[in-house]
Length: 182
Length: 123
Ligand SMILES: Nc1nc2c(ncn2[C@@H]2O[C@H](COP(=O)(O)OP(=O)(O)OP(=O)(O)O)[C@@H](O)[C@H]2O)c(=O)[nH]1
Ligand SMILES: [Mg+2]
Image (tube, rainbow over all chains, first blue to last red; front, side, top):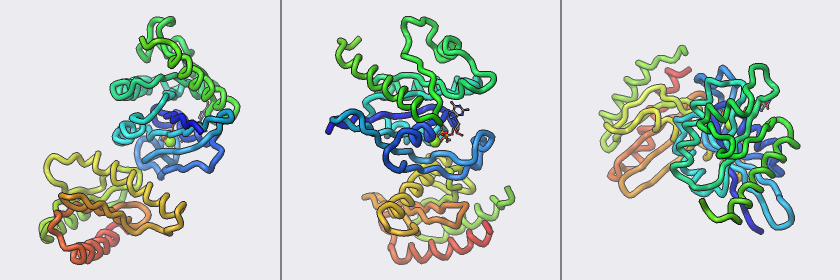
């Protein structure tokens, strides 16, 4: 059985833990603790180490899903988790533009440490004030639509939507491993 | 928050200065924020707090999933010294950094005593 390790990262409240809970076939290992800082403005609990879930993908492959904490004081966990990732998805809440800068910072952190393929997942696109993909891409530093990572919309609460995002990530990874490295 | 940072800091300071072979101590929230700290120079309070919380949360998971029960303590033994995490009620985690020369029995006793003092303030 081949194992592919996928990392789910992004700012606080983007939906990383929810994403993994939505598709995991095992009971998720979560390390959420009661929030006592600004995370409280968004929700009651926040991840302090990582989330772990598993998903069978076809007969010969198992996906191991690792969710990072969102808060930068846990960046040592970002480092630990990205080291072994085969691919990762950066989740960004489309309706919280003030967090795009933090999303970009996380992306830079990951890119400095790992060459693994990345796609961007936009959550909360159903919420009022959500930006569209083109503008978010711009805010994340991708002005040229022809030269940017795949961007998918995903509702972390919906299993089918999350499954679709996971498939996109796996396919993008396969496509990259067939093509010569650029 | 109603917690008295000053009182906590005083307890930590006297713990660190009065016990031989103790190099630092901190009290942090379970989500990794410092409540009070008395750490060796060069160690970042925020980072130490976040690491303590991450470690204790994983210890808790090991306790429950591998049927070890509630976790009282996590002990990290390096060739230069010890890092000991003790849960300090619902709302705090107590971290102690000790020198390799520390006597373990004595260390545990001191930690237990200080824990009681800290809990009294945190109540
Ligand atoms: N309406 C809506 N809500 C969403 C969507 N995606 C996620 N959420 C909600 O957003 C919240 C995300 O919470 P978590 O999954 O804990 O976020 P996280 O990214 O793990 O946060 P940290 O661990 O604190 O960094 C949950 O309440 C989800 O129900 C979406 O697409 N639409
Ligand atoms: Mg989380």
